[in-house]
Image: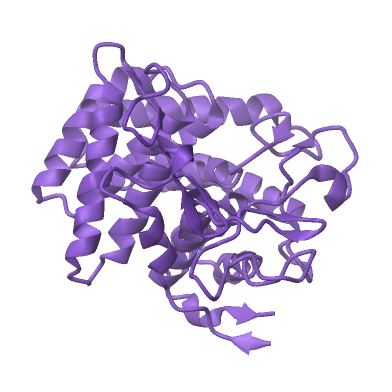
Length: 356
């Protein structure tokens, strides 16, 4: 085993980014321009860039951040109270403005900018856009749109948020708690009747909201759900087994890895960051230890025993299946790896990583 994590490398990320945003998919490591762009990936890019440029004076990162924010602002339609998501490479929107997970991700990115440097001009603009989006965000019904928005609203200090945004945080937190209470039962401590994708963000949101709102009962619900979900991913075992892209349903026996489908980097990143959130707000080192183990899925602590991270390019493969890794290294996967590694670095845990 090798101690220590790969260094943060942004080379492949830079290949995917242009003056519009970040290209969604890749042919291997070559950007697939025909896949265009989406708000989901651009929002992830903005969040990652805030950490990448932390303490680094790099005009390239600043330009990418400015382009990313411009994309999110352009996607919002205040008259229709919705947001485009998909844009082709020719800069034409492919969908009408609507609500959905992408709106929550955009809210998370905007909140992160406000929290990063509340005094700078971009923060004021992002806060105003969040206020404009409030009525749309209040209509959130999917657990992930709620969770992404909650995470974004917990990043700035409460004194920075306007009263309506504070009310939005309360509303969405209550709604996510209701979803948990509705579906929670013996042997199934979850927010839905299925484990689907990016699952870790749901307990992460309740942990963050409980801490920010100083409501211990909410945090305890998040911790309970996270503990159960981490066990579903065998975080304490020799290998990490994520939920596959065919999902895992309540009241059904757990399928084999091959039957459940490919494991995806977005799920590893969500689990890592949820465990770090728990470590920060509880002070319990055990959560940090498990976050490190979950991250090692990228490096080979998985069912196939192979790295999903590409040590040669700094990118990340799009999934892990019975026959090994997906050869393509798209935006979602590469950003998932970077977000997870940057979160460990923020928490001072990067040196604890072991490469299997």
